[in-house]
Image (cartoon, rainbow, N blue to C red; front, top):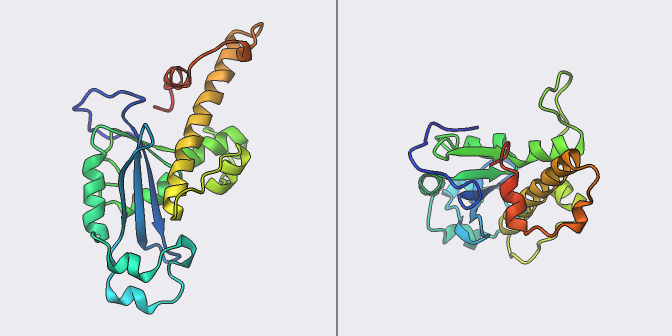
Length: 212
């Protein structure tokens, strides 16, 4: 999805950000994280809940979050989402499941210059989804599946949202490099790409025609 917010020049690499929203089984946001292109945390906060939230059992057990985390949170979701929407201006945002996460934002992430879905991109690579799909609904893979497929491991964060957003960043980078390798082999079939020393940032920079 691309917004009409084109008031600033965009760097297809440096202006990338990575977003993950952690929710309960009842689809209530409890934590959110936003990384910049270099992997630095731009925003990572627990989400303050109303009293009714704590009356329900196991709302957040799968997130590794306890009641104190949420009680002491600085922002409600309305407040946090507005901050993130502002931070996305002039950015290319990558989300694993874009259709799911965007629905929690009043602007549907249109404040970003462009929003991309890593889940669809991976499924296209893996073979369960194609841009000209004509049959049944495509079979999408989870972030966990995609990470394991590429042997991407990140468990340093205390909370799931941190691990997931770093996995997302690594996954997008991996897909960038694979796309460039595929294009390179197509037009240079007699050359071995493994023999060419290209810095990672240059490889990514060459692969932005479809996935800035």
